[in-house]
Image (cartoon, rainbow, N blue to C red; front, top):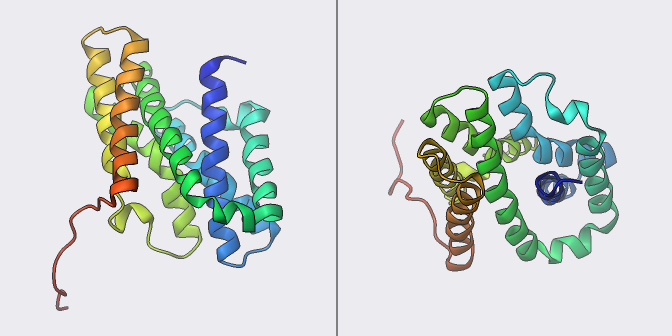
Length: 205
């Protein structure tokens, strides 16, 4: 199995567990847990592939991309008390998945002929899209809109990867640099409690 595919599947697995935990806390049944796990793990890449015309999406042509989130959903359904206690650790692994996905998504968008800015935006979408779909299905405001520094690190990492590619830097260097920008920023936000600015006071309607 190529290293990039293995890392991508690992990221899908961690994202899927976070989606499964949301489903458990919403008291959904086993189908709901698997559905939210799959949506979280695969949603961002699925949306990206549709937007760039990479059809059918890779998630529908490689059985591993469907098996991994289903396995993660079943694992979460069966062992959610233990996984819930490990949520801080899962958030760290989630940061690694975000870093990988934002770069991989941006580079794939470039391969399909998009310009630097659209490619960076699609890199961000690859990283955060699944979480947004998960939260909408769960009936809550998406985490990325509630102060979490999540989308911004993903966009920054994707932008670094895109600009490095445009400057003809080696792909290994581009991938590492973009992923590290996203990863370090996201981990600092987790451990230091950094939040995105929000309006003060209450708005009158």
